[in-house]
Length: 370
Image (cartoon, helix red, strand yellow):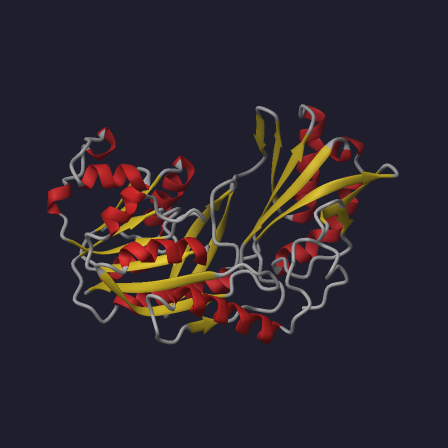
């Protein structure tokens, strides 16, 4: 990827290495962290070199009565005004410059605009959230609707204690996992994987971990909107998936209906609450329609935040014969493996280059009980 802001914009902090060399460095770093628990090879999945990011947030910098896209600079002591961003998905790139020009023509849309968030899909749908330091009124809504119509996008306006949805608050994505197509609704302010091409490879890798097994039931923690859950459900009898976000659970249930899948129960529970429920330490009204004793869980998937699994979740995960652990932080993954390796052995490991031109490592390990 060629970008005129390499070395100045703080978004890409690993800009000075050839892509393949940078990826090899990530592999070496991950191998080093996994070495106490795993001596096998790591499967490496490379990313598209450009137009790979479906979620992007840009600060708006005001100068000479004009709004500009901006990011923090590499030194984190100022800003870099942007003229391009080749990493954003093609639908975003196609409107990126003209959208800001149109906003600059409207004093109402431009005034006190603080940031712009993009959420796009490979189906060419784009959701744009305009975030302000002012109250939004009817005049703003009229100009925003004109902008929505002009670019064929969906717009949400946000300010303090205010959210205006002009048309809808989600975009539709289609992912082909092996030879099967899955439809997802991606909601604004709800977590989605930022690299759709890498996301497809991650899901297929997780499916490959279990597809040859004679599986019973499956449980997933941190399930989000069902990103992994839906494709994996075809390899199991019954599925229980939990997530703390109300918006994500709403989307997950919609996505289940969209794909005509009927063997999944999505429940709004945190990972620690799920542990309390399964260890029978606490009863939850949210589980009143679900008989946990009917499940014969054999496989668990976890995709925790950067902090990794807490102690309760770790104890829960140890109870399952097979563990798929998707990690966005290899340091906390290694810390969790110190405990998991006492009962389980890593059978497969993978590196997914979700964020090219950064030092960020997304990885996956598949473990089976010793």
